[in-house]
Length: 494
Ligand SMILES: NC(=O)C1=CN([C@@H]2O[C@H](COP(=O)(O)OP(=O)(O)OC[C@H]3O[C@@H](n4cnc5c(N)ncnc54)[C@H](OP(=O)(O)O)[C@@H]3O)[C@@H](O)[C@H]2O)C=CC1
Ligand SMILES: O=C(O)CCCC(=O)O
Image 1 (cartoon, rainbow, N blue to C red):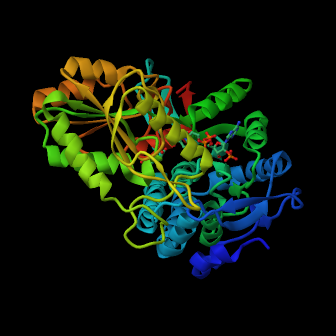
Image 2: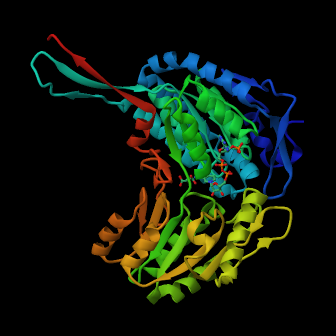
Image 3: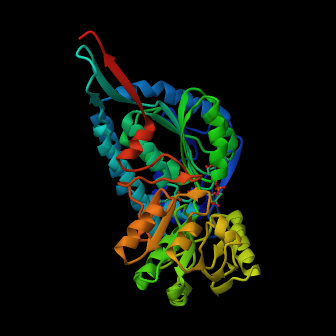
């Protein structure tokens, strides 16, 4: 049986959106590996949700061939037509938001309202790039002589391979596929093994929207490395777009080097969240909760290190701990739950390890600090004080609901500490003084800086990092550039 009653109990109304297959060249196919399957579990209960075909390199190759064959005709369509098809996909996703959110909560664990928010966030990227499809402008350049004209046109890069993580099973796919399809690329997409069902449901709606066969292909499977090797090594694929760990990003970049394949990488973070003495403290606490505990702390832009200036350290810690202690933890389908399970045992073990290391080196637990016994992979939302830079939480992304509070004295000192990491994705700070706001914003070595806010993601803004947090930007008008080649035309003899 492909889908279990544990799944249909939650998502019975959305079963028309589910298939127990990958999607290659417009056909739902179990692939050559039909005999092999893999299990999708609900992290809140440990229950089996579905068994899916475990596809690998052979199916990936078939999908690449289909995408390669479909690409010229897709690119040749007027931009307005591609735009209208994407717009229809957006409309269908919004119309099915509850059903999609139920699938997402069942396989990933985030609370249902948060899952619904993610579905609408994912849809917003599709809407945005449906609009941008019509605005891929070139340029004319004043020529150095009268007999010439110089023009730049933009063309799609070709077939794109996307590899995405489990923490945003809808949004990460949407923000890669939408710009790719909008500008005329075709796609072979591989979702994380923990969360393939949301991807399948999005593909079902893509088919209904009229996205032609071969334009969007989906491979589901356990063997990420084998699928990745095929995507990176196959010369019909012209670009890889990846979101996930820095470690895997590095592997993919190396694998793409042989063919000088384009890469977009959205990798790990180690976000500082700084609260200065002159900040609005209540707003800073709200911002810290929004940034730190969103998705149970499992986002690459979650605050990872909270730096609090001495004058407000104790007051901030007390206010934050009081609110965090009240957060409701549980199955994401239960009304009122704010923190769902972590994705799996491995994720839970990493969080336990970070807290254990901090406590062993002298940190104090104000609230939380331990796993919650039971079937699911739950960790109590935690606040740690007395945290110092020799602790693992200072260097590594925890990816869990743990707020470690560091104390600092001066702006110069905190900027040095905040920048003392190989990562450079997101940073946040709360301050009142305008001069300080500018100075600190400019000094932070990050791709994105939230100032007096803990949430800044939007399809309208360029999302991405510097240093070892990645290459390229997703969202905004800049996000389309990652899927375009520039071609210079020089017309002579005029
Ligand atoms: N930037 C971000 O948003 C994310 C960061 N992370 C960070 O990474 C840590 C580990 O999480 P994890 O889920 O293991 O992240 P990974 O980077 O391992 O997984 C992300 C995606 O990459 C695939 N993948 C894994 N190995 C390869 C490979 N060699 N070649 C091609 N694709 C591959 C995975 O497939 P499969 O699922 O089949 O293994 C999945 O689809 C987290 O604790 C967190 O710190 C994790 C997720 C997202
Ligand atoms: O962790 C991630 O990579 C997803 C980022 C979510 C967001 O867009 O804010």
